[in-house]
Image (tube, rainbow, N blue to C red; front, side, top):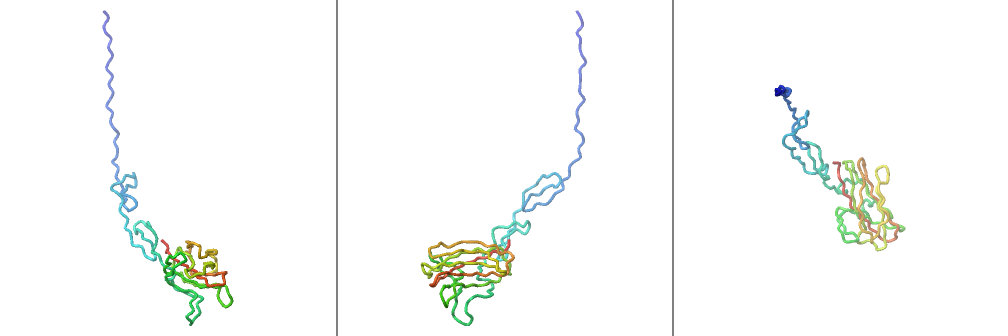
Length: 219
């Protein structure tokens, strides 16, 4: 018989992992926008902090001083609280063609802190009344409601126009009558120093226009 042929056993040398230098995290502390984070590898630890919300004021909306996030709007500031510069009321008399107060519109809604204009397109009467307010305190938007007063003649129509100090027309309501639902609108007043609200009519009987404006400061 022939001898059995055998092969030498092959063995592989043991594999060892290469030496690795241990990573040292460079931590950025947690904020209300992100958890504690390593700026080199991106790993996080824990969770983000909670926002520290301030209360809203007339000058600013609620915000977080740490990150600058804003929630909602500043408190509503009635236009009639601003400093009045002029109007068409006759000085030294009881005639008040532009009044301020709480008035009911033709649909029975109470418009609070509103302007009430009395206009008549007829000889001896004014078909346009206006009032001017100082806005230098700094506001961003004017939100408003336009309606006719409950006393308004059924067929009477009024029109509201809004101008800035350079007589640029910011808003024109078109003709509004007693059968018109109260209109909602918004105007950008950022950078506007003075605001003139005009009410006019083309009707020869008493007409009463209502304008309720609310200002919001910059966020």
